[in-house]
Image (cartoon, rainbow, N blue to C red):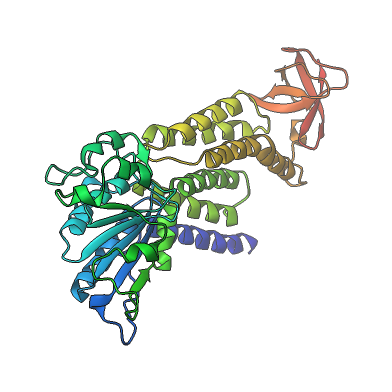
Length: 419
């Protein structure tokens, strides 16, 4: 009766884990926003503003394209992106579609970088396709890398485009470089102005009337889309990946499938979604997985040894090599590495000791078995019994390579004497 009662939660847990994996495989649907307008608002006098924070991923791109469709259908005055982005993770086709729509839209398009933000990489290159650009003091633009857009698009920053492939500049430097409304009048380069706040920036848009009903309307990601956008950041994806792997290994050393396995499956599923969205190196992911497996080898004998050191080394290398083209905060990487070390040296050994100290699962059956000392055994050491390494201690002392016999068990440690 007890056996069958254990199967029900296990089945439920596995079913829930499958649902989480299915959700991660499907990913977010096209973003939706509330299109309700103020009763007396005139769309032709309205400016719609979208906050673009973090990497430009498919979730952000879908929101921009969906809202741009609505803006064009309503014939609004302007469509503005409030930018604070370190780059784009869109594929070339999706990025070209986004840039083309912003460039060819009949609605006035604009980007304001601020309040103290960035427009780097693919986000910076988009500044060259809109009608008006504003940069707040303290914000930076550039570091675009090689152009992603075809020759039919003008250079994003005119004569300074090549320089800004590897460098970033602020608004004052942009104006000093000649990227101004004056040069924009004779070319397709977007006018760049230094504007401290977005309300002030809106006044530079042609036809903007601050007194009009709902003159500025801010549009945000729906909760579901915001969730998936957050999951696809390098920091969150990395922590979800290593957290999921750690919890699944933990579950291997406990009886049955429980809450740790469910949470681990959840973390790993959304970590995989993040990997599917972000540019990553397969080598980095493989190194992290191999590192966790190597640490698990020593966890099963409750004795951190060479495999633990090897596992941590692989884990650290994987942390440094996992991302390709996007950056991750060093704080996140350090947190993951320190967490892995504590997990291997303190967390899992403590759990294993607790488990094996129970009266149901013990090591008393090893009493009387003979083996060989793997290290000098005194207050602590290790002995090989039946082909496996075990933590051991001895009151009389046992030398390296000397034959030893198990005479007792002290919790998870074998008590041995030389033969």
